[in-house]
Image (cartoon, rainbow, N blue to C red; front, side):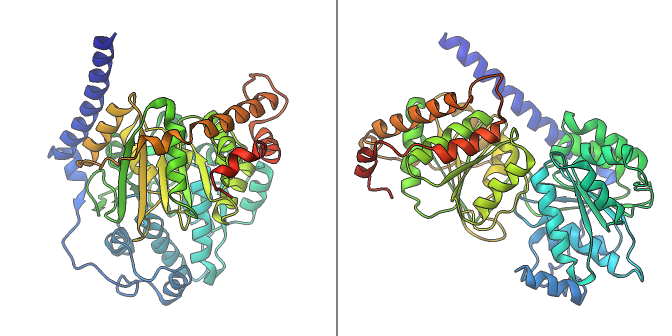
Length: 478
């Protein structure tokens, strides 16, 4: 049995190493990919938006949003974008990629006597990221009353069609819903589009988006500016670049896979049976912090949120199984600090910029090493400091080693007195048992149930037990 486990570990490690090696070989080859991308010329990096050539109206909008100086990716990408070049922008998550494409697009719109409707389209892999991009466009373009339509699933299509009928300047959406409107919404087309942006391009090239992306590229003008932004450059991104960009400039402000210097990273090596105890220990050491906890499954988000609420933590969950309204509601409660702990799946790990997140906890270690980079990128954004801690059990150690290999550095191991952990065991066991009972009573584990997952979650939150008060009081938590 041990030999079989070693063989499986070795096979998975070899597969991921092979993938990384293939990407490195393609990046190193001097063939077609190298010829298609003109390397960025060495220039002095601008320290203000004015030096970048941004107009006064947009400089004021940047000030209003708290953007005092351009980030690295903005300083490198914006001058080329203002010259009318296609762009490939590679930057660490949280490096300000949205501003790097939004500012040049809005400035081009400002130069027109009458700003053109349906001027630019931005594609995003997730609903939340699309909504966030739309909000940033509207904030930056407030001086010209910029109109932006966000087209995502989980929202009434009729309302979106009404928004499109008002002829917005910018359309932001997920590929599937944008294609739905291009196919079915009368009078809507992108045949005069001037700018196309593919944000989080590596994620957009997953199988579930491939056909929609191809269909969209077939119905928009060939004569356009195209910006491709991503935290990582993969083989698929390289192929897309050759397919839809013309003589692009590639700007890169970080190594291939990296985290920012202001992020402190640690891990606990924990027994699988006591992972909840270690989690509560970490949370107790971080009172008042805004914390995102990543788990592997949608069911785990609900169970962990209930368990933590039973322990008097202000926790809320978000997952891909929730309706769009419920997901946005949960995000807003977290953003407004009504709840300071957000438990989520990888649906929230891409591109979301939530102000004030101090800590990211990897409760479950991601199987894909690159997902780690996106998860921990929710903190230490835009020059701020942050803390990422991973709870690694004996079955996840190999995956964590692959993450260290990807980052090309060792992450420090955090030690803790085992007695401190075991003292929490009984209390946490009770809280988890009550959470499981609550989920079972509300239909949480049944395949056929009358309520949706998010209806269950609302009811669970209202009915979250606060019994066993004597035990909880011993811990001193309020």
